[in-house]
Image (cartoon, rainbow, N blue to C red; front, side, top):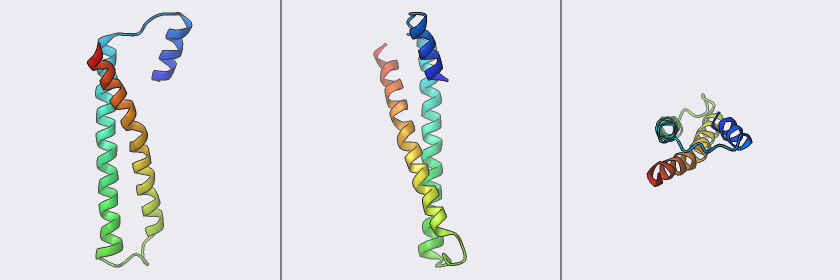
Amino acid sequence: MLAIVDIYALMVKRCLRNRRAVCLFTIGDGITAAVTFSAACASAGITVLINNDLNICSENHCAQFESAVAMAYMCWFTIAPSFVLNFYSLASS
């Protein structure tokens, strides 16, 4: 959505340095990054519990769990720079 708004602003040659909009995007990115990181950590903890502590990996789909945890961390690594850049943009304005 933000990319569409940016493209529209470039097409009409208008600056979108609205402090309220940047603040809302920063808060949204921060909440999304925090929730995604928390979910990835919780998923990793459950995977370690099943695999190492309970030793019931043969009854479960541990490889799929580990892949899901890796993808959750990759998702967080793509959200975190967006939050940092929006936060920097908010702080510099």
